[in-house]
Length: 102
Image 1 (cartoon, rainbow, N blue to C red):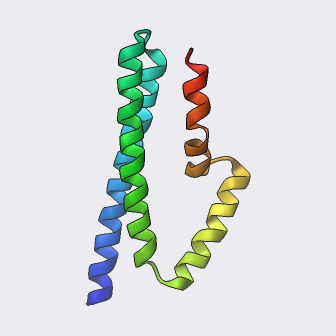
Image 2: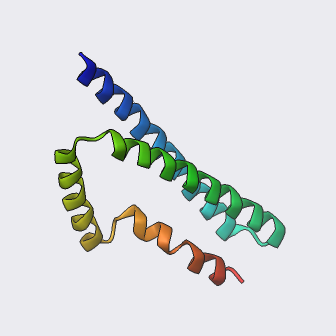
């Protein structure tokens, strides 16, 4: 019973993470389209906020996983890196995006 409860909790955490990543992407897209420097900076700060929140939630998710699942997750992460769809790649590129706005 406890395992099902944990799975439900982790599922909800994953949904929240996904929602926050979508919000982050939305703010970044808005910043790219905005010509006002002050508004662009505000949008980028909001995107950064959602990035931090999603990363904290992801850390909670990772801490609740079994060590067996973490191994599988790491293998999937490596596969995602090869295909170019890893979320961490996008987060690493964030500072370059700020520089390219000018």
